[in-house]
Length: 234
Image (cartoon, rainbow, N blue to C red; front, side, top):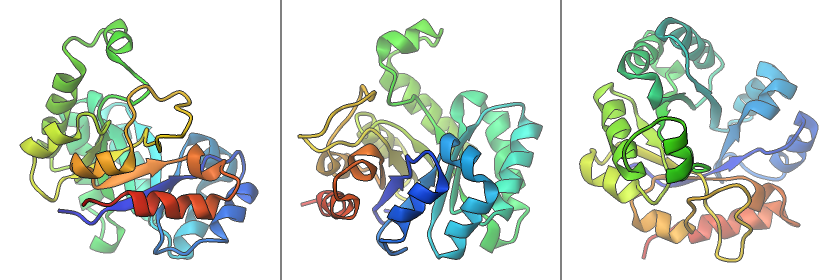
């Protein structure tokens, strides 16, 4: 199975604040996730700075468009040197295949991991049904995960609550990246389907994404270490 890793979501409004945290950690301690807010404020240059420092960067922009547009976006991301990029599985097999082909055209050193977002962890059964997706959440997640693996993607983003089902149907190297991770004492914020780091590990999750419980902690670096230690299997 892929080595386990904590991915810190840099939930900061601007690059300066993010760098105050990044300056205190080492590239081998975690990967870093750059989402919409930070990418829009810092731009590609900020991402490239993180890459230049030796950090694995997960560019979390969740591409979802026509296949050609998504393919071109993934190609640009690859040129930035990011470690991982994602698309929405709901964009369909054709879109995911186009993204895979675009990344594969680059040299091996510029081929980021490509993963697909299944059902967002902020969604529950009620909200999934409200947007017109039929079926139980676990069925939808497993179907989209299978579709992603068939398109030769490297993994998926899913709640840890579905991780064991995905692991049972996928190959050992297939990555399962899980946000919505909280310690028992943490605030749930806007996440509806959450689990603890140890439970995620037991379910077969390979990478956990943790944002506010680390970035908004009184001591973010100490909080990171707590999550690193908690993300282990007995």
